[in-house]
Length: 151
Ligand code: FES
Ligand code: FES
Image (cartoon, rainbow, N blue to C red; front, side, top):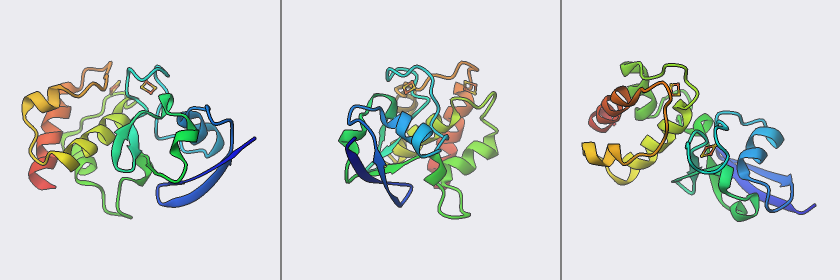
């Protein structure tokens, strides 16, 4: 099988996998990086949202072959050592999570949004497509605004 080299949370990795294997399988099953969650597998729920070269992406629909030489960041790599990312801190302050399943993806989406839009409007936040079956949307909005103010 071909090998693919890229970085995950700052660490160089090489995996042996078919080029069309979804990156979510590579992360979870080959590398043991389980922060990105499997919800739908077809790019709809966004539970798997992570960053590819700093942009939000959905590894369930991104083949590993497209990630060669690139930087993958998952929720495990968002903090700077012991210092939480402003979005993570805001999530804790607002106590956003309910069951938690969607939350890694929600946080990664919010972090990518704030990286390009430091002061998102309600409409910007409403445009986020990550699904939360527990309905934590009001707290997500509050936490994003808090992170925008403190980050
Ligand atoms: S599991 Fe990736 S978008 Fe649903
Ligand atoms: S916190 Fe349960 S699905 Fe979002």
